[in-house]
Image (tube, rainbow over the protein chains, first blue to last red):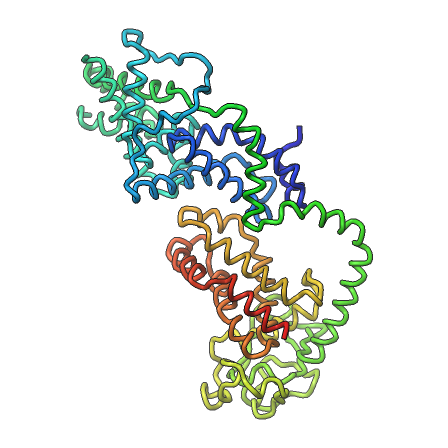
Amino acid sequence: MSSDEKLLRCCRAGDAESFCALVNRYRRPLYAHVVRIVRRHEAADDVLQETFVRLWRALDAFAPQRPLWPYLRRIATNLALDHLRRLTRRRESELGEAAEFLPETAGGGAPTVPGGELETNELLEAVRRATEELSPETRACLVLRLYEGLGYRQIAETLGIALGTVMSRLARGREALRQALARECER
Amino acid sequence: MSCSEFREQASAWLDDELTPEAARQMDLHRLACPDCAALAEELRRADAAFRAQPTPMPDEAYWSGFEQRLLAHLGHEGLPIARRPALRRAFRRWRLPAAAAVALGFCALGGYLATRYLVRPRAAGDSLTVAVPGRAETETGGVSLRDSRGGWDRIPWGGEIPPSGAPLAGKVLSPAEVAVPPRAKGGTPGESGPAPSETTGGRAPDSTAGEMPLMAQELSNSALPVAALDMEMDVIAGTAAVLSRLGTNDRLNLDGFIAARDQAAESSLFIRLNALRRNAPPEAARLLEPFELLMQRLGNLDGENVAQEGPALQKLVRDCDLTERARLVRAQLNR
């Protein structure tokens, strides 16, 4: 399999097939990253396409030896947030649209959560609701930290925000999730 | 450490983002305080629960059509993805004849420019010698030259023209003695201004017009990768593309734009744009002025000032309707 660098060099020379190979390589992980932030398929589809369009536009300026995934992740994350901000401005509710999700799941099979005293489905439902009630920016911080494993500085660079803002958003997000779990435990 | 302090720092502590000393304090407090230990455990479970959420992925039907939709999207935006392989094949077939044609074009362009602005580095030393063509600097009180070592010199422009071949640095040139070719007499805005003695008293104003000799030097070196016949169109299209890339970036991506930019290409475009504007008919030159101004501001943009200057420049680019302006310039140049 060709390396990203080799494919990028071919793309810059005008090879559409190499570009399709790159798209094929990154579309699924990128979709998964985006849909965790935007929480609905149509938005993830728009963001995914726009991300690859941005990559195509930037081919001439993009150094092929640079790692591609962080670049795509940064573009996609910010496009996802822009998308959600536009939705917020239009006062369109994001709640309830998770029903549009398609059934396949990333892990394949029922996920497990530590804390066996809780019913897993109820717990996940509580977490899902709490996640959707988070601000998009807070959700993006949590996704970058807990799924992508980025450090605070990398998150700040990806989102173009201050280190302290990353810290406070993560603290706020975790606290909201913790309270949602606590409420579920009390039932 | 108090419980409230523990609570404030718990998230960063879980992420190993505290200093070793702060982390040690947190560890000690957690061991001594059952409530905070429970809190830490609940936060860990919250993390695990967040990660355990299923990620909804579309089925294969979605992915099977994804690339085609994307290519259609690219084609809809006018991005030439479908044509590029064909261009590459054509390039392979015609590269030798094309190289010869380009070489001939450069020779012709160099000869043409040499008759208009002949700027030659001296064989030894840093100063430049010049045979002044006359047209370009009649409105300025000075001229900036970059010497053969890459440094800049600002040279007074208000006395006698030196003989051809004499060192220019430090010479005082008289605008009255600068011959104005017929095309420039009609005057474009900014090219038909008063003589420098009337406006600046012989001092050099800070004007892009003063960069003509640099332009001439670089062009006469034939180092620019552009065929002579297509130079004008390439310059306009290239400039519009660079500026549009800036204009379509959002603020959060400005740093990425700065990191990925090709400053050598931008400088080359700016120099060629400057040459094009100076030689263009008045109406086209007027239309090209915003391109040059925006490229100049882009050249001043760097990692340090991008946060302050970048958004304003982006707005200018967006307000400038470069596509329509480029079309008008082409129409003027094709007349």
